[in-house]
Image 1 (tube, rainbow, N blue to C red):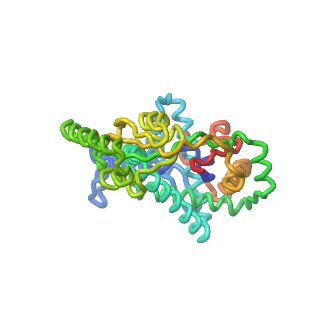
Image 2 (image 1 turned 120 degrees about the horizontal axis):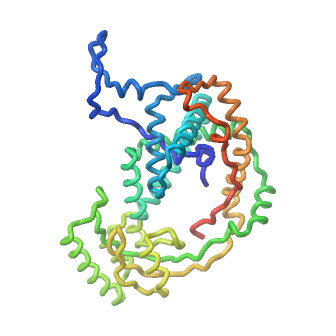
Image 3 (image 1 turned 30 degrees about the horizontal axis):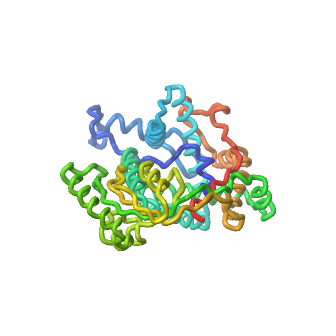
Length: 370
């Protein structure tokens, strides 16, 4: 389940860490210190908002704007200037709220935030280790916004700590009866789609470190190897042993190349092949962005409804988030007033309609695995 900051903090929102603009030729000299100071640095270090225990600079807000533009572009959206001005104000409000919460965090909040962020980060690492497509997409996305995995982990830790503060101070308590009622009244949200249990051998046609395609000669050599492997697999050779010996998918190599997944989770070409196979059938060579695959289907798992016992904790979390969202606007005003928040740049002061937070109904995606 998403944590509360997935909903409350409206940006996709890691804090993009800025670097000085070394190419800026416009400089000024500090006569007292004899140091060279970039005019751009004077502006980026300008404080645009502050409160008890924190300040937010123009550079930090600009970094969030860079990330917002990058995220919009990745979705094929081109935000107009007037839209960007609204987004900038919203991003500043989100930064302020998070900073206020971090100042209020107790040691217990910080410990809870670290535990949550560590688990989320490890879950991400586990997911990308099992899916080459996710690994490539992750590295590409981080590179596009100038983040390392460690910096991403730090941002998740801050947001999880803020979440812990909100939960502690609002004293949210969801009962078992509320969970059961939501489950009973929303049956469609607990339908698990059809899945397949399959295994594959992968020979990659991209460099795992750079994400770039291998030279054509190397790709041709790997395709020839896969053709030989396909003959052996169809002749009845132990598929799991072949995976251990040849596959280059680090996430599945040690468990015989096996995955269980519904539609919409893998490369389209991979999914189409897997769902078209009969039990124990071996596919033709399938080409995806990651490389060449040979797939063997072990089982097709029909759609079904997930039992309450398997999703009760997630339902409780979704209901807790919805309860928190209803209280967040008043809570934000309270804690920001207590922190003496000031927005120092007139053009960044919010208009009420621009900063109103959405309050969506709770939803419960079905688990991917039985």
